[in-house]
Image (cartoon, rainbow, N blue to C red; front, top):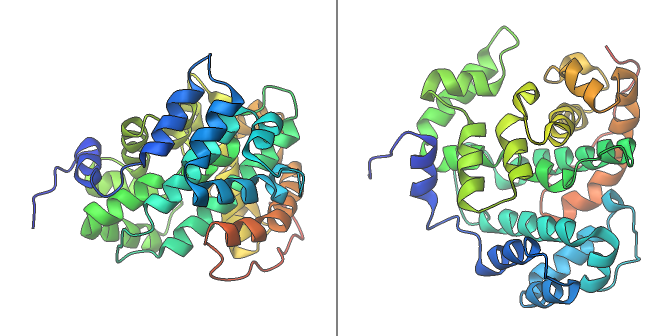
Length: 301
């Protein structure tokens, strides 16, 4: 067995040959950063991958984006959603496909992506709640990829990942998984995730969401984006367990809610919207291993 360089960059370097974004995704990302790029340029690049084209259109027409059945072509998707949103959608979907063949003994791909799709949907609804008030640029993709570092850990350092998971499950206090990972390894999945995001040349806004979604107060360049994913992460946990009690979810930063122009009374509506629009996306992204139960929302505590 090869020795693992137990640092975020070391883990990512070791997975490089297995989890490298296909050329089409990298090319799309590069084109989107070029001011001279047209919608037709992006459309041609995406169209080189028929499977990606199909999935982008299906997701773009899902309830999460509010354009049911109105987007028939990639060029139309770019017109409606914008170049950057379609870029990030393409890269996010490709990332899901990239990890499909990488096994690990700790979580199934279905369960992992299920939680992340729920976060993505919730982040989209939170951004919609903000409307034009400096809404996050790519909330759906930020939510989809926010825990990507966990997959790297589970593949490259499974025993340490297992130890951190068990420590978290057995904890009698409110410690989160990141705390346990840092105790076991000296760093957490957020640090590993942002190392992978840098290797993939993802936009800085996505990098910051991945790095700071458990510590939104540390965000400097894109604090609203990070706050949206931070809150969405807790909503996703509630959606997964069908609970409307915030005490059942990771604690939400009051500062993040304030930054988003929200408070705890907004959570039932965000949770309800997430539960309504998530099932189709769970199916589209291969994460529908179990149906979502209706949430029990008697109160928000």
